Length: 80
Image (cartoon, rainbow, N blue to C red):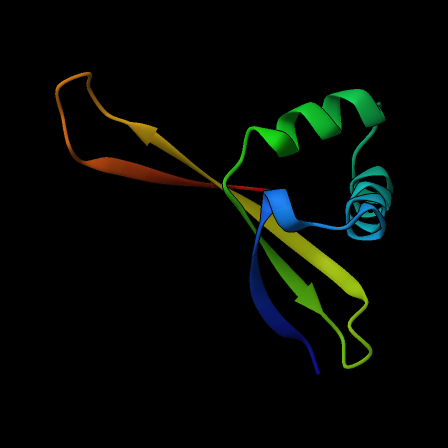
């Protein structure tokens, strides 16, 4: 069974980030740790998909951008 949980990026452990990086390397070419880490730290939250032993099997990230300088509305963007 896979269970999803939302985790603030700032509270991800080193092990969780490494596991996420390994998943990215599995499915995408030319993934470098520095770029992955920089992109991840620009995000607000991560949705982790974990098995019953809490091993990460997939993930996506969430960034929030202000639509306009004087706008109080925010637009969430979900990225993998």
